Image: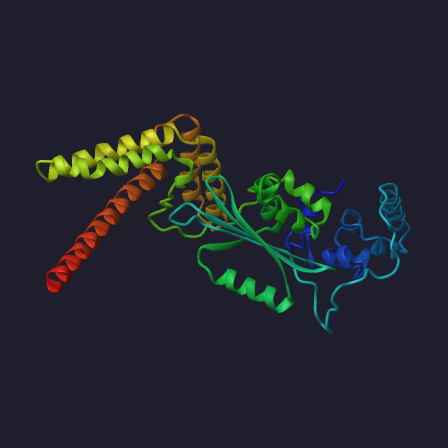
Length: 364
């Protein structure tokens, strides 16, 4: 039986120890010498999973490999797969020396609002397709897909790799999370369209994949591994947040001195964070923390990933919001920024009233 991880890597065109480029080329395009590959039987299994009957029909020897290819063709026929001896039609023609473009995936770290970006691209006989997903509060917030020319797709990759918040992840891992967030719900249409360009066997492998089975090597995190993760506000109760915002000026106005003001604000932050999570969505917070931990892991920051994952586990265990750093930070920033905005709005209103009054006096 073929190694599922190696098979998935070949299907995803992810070259590495489990899937050498020669095996990938033979399974997808029928290029090269099957008998010279490190594991010819794995290549045959991959071609069968891709439905590449042309590659299987090209096997003429040795006898053992020809027999294995014939068995794979028989299974394809029994599944109703059309056996195609002629070259598969293509919507575009590769120029001289051009190779098929690889499927790639990128995942961002969360921004200050907790939103994350997942980008998938794939190429097949029908062309090149890209799918962008905005993930927020443990769910898909927005999706966009489109077809690109080869030059346009390369430009997308160039922009993605230039961004410090995005990191490339194994394509099959990207499929795993896209399937988890898009298989149901309002954005299913974009996902279904993208899947028209994804081999079914690869999707099945992605569904059962452990995304962190082969984590990347850690980079030097220095002396401060704290990821300073901000819990998305969408998982917290809006009524509790608004109550905290409204109480900010009351606390400040009633304080007799700076110490009393600071103590009152600290108590308000704690109360608001506790109430906002108590009436919020702990499961969604845990999902957001888990995906953030995955992003941090692929950014080479396992210590930061462990910190965020622990916060998600604490939320599921019933910890108060003020005891979960990501929740406490998010609540505090919201209350401070909203209070500053109200002050700015009030100053602008006073200035506007003053100008209007001056204009009336001048008119008299």
